[in-house]
Length: 525
Image 1 (spheres, rainbow, N blue to C red):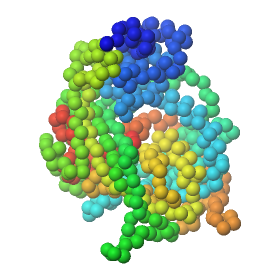
Image 2 (cartoon, rainbow, N blue to C red; image 1 turned 90 degrees about the vertical axis):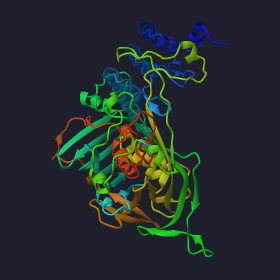
Image 3 (spheres, rainbow, N blue to C red; image 1 turned 135 degrees about the vertical axis):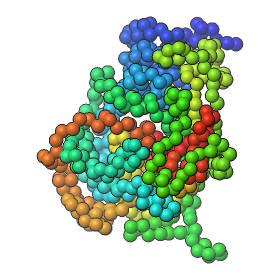
Image 4 (cartoon, helix red, strand yellow; image 1 turned 120 degrees about the vertical axis):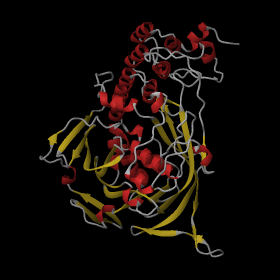
């Protein structure tokens, strides 16, 4: 029996006010603390919080009321975040509002986690290690154009320093530089310093534990909003539900044995990770009709491969291991104004909980690609580092600092890996590219590093780091906050590399509005 409006208003009071665009009534109720935090984050029958519902419908005043009421902006439905849903409306004012609040709430979450992070860092033994990231290819000359980087990680007490040279992606080119990030624990608080050695600038952010909610936060620059609204929305994630690990074998038939290899002087067991799936989705309904499937400008990698333009029938040429999953495009009763997207379904249909033939908001245009692959891991039982005690806190820190590389590695190593430290991980990407992560120069034992010394602590190696590792120096001038860079959820750096490799086999996005192949990356974006 269908629910009445009174029943819906009782079960989903905030959603009901949102659906009917009652922003004044909602503001008054939230100001009077009429609803609990749990009610503010309650999901409707289709999995949306009140804020996600308001964003999808494009109700700007309602979104403002919910944000003022401290609704969680770091929410998502089916993998699409509130910021991405705001982007999909095409409304710059709505996107600016949601993005500004998202950035502030991320800052608060980071600050609230400082005491626990400082405690974990302080308890973990000090170390120095280098993490080499490589994108390689079997195609002649291509590897010379693929990105690579070596993260140099210093950790002493509650202080962490990371040096990197691959700093971004712009105009279809890898952006190189010379950057250092220094995280310094100070009691229950911390500071994060970014040094640009080439420009001679420094930028500092202070993270204070227990920071007040709802303080003013600057809006994103207009060019950040414009860049988001003029680009497809991408999500990339690693599906590990069916993953399994098995020892790789070596030798001839009948004389097979478990495979071991030396990696940077350490004997490692070699494992294969089977049934790992990389999923990539891209949305483009917010783009003008003629720009929804644009050809990517040619990059050096594309030129070396002499890549041809894609077929309109890309899905017909796809290889069997590429599962193309087209998403249905729903009809939409469009408002003349882009500021407000009218629901295409009635409230009776939406709140009934039954599957919908069409959804609310702007009709989605989604392309999805699923790629199965087998990863290879080299695991060492007696490596001087401990994955959970020493590396995971660093990955937590770097992922919070919006480093897409570290966020993806964190996703992978959080799986239930076989015993041992993953000294090397290799993930084959599409057709011509491999991603490889290798740990090396542990405690500066392979090559000397300034202010780092390895010592024997009983039977094990240990590491001593000088204060100079975490000093900023006086030669740097203050720089503005690095807000011109897009957050890591856009994942452009890896998405572009894999998109180019897809084109080699003629399986990149179809130019029609049907959902066909997209790109994907080695982890969640």
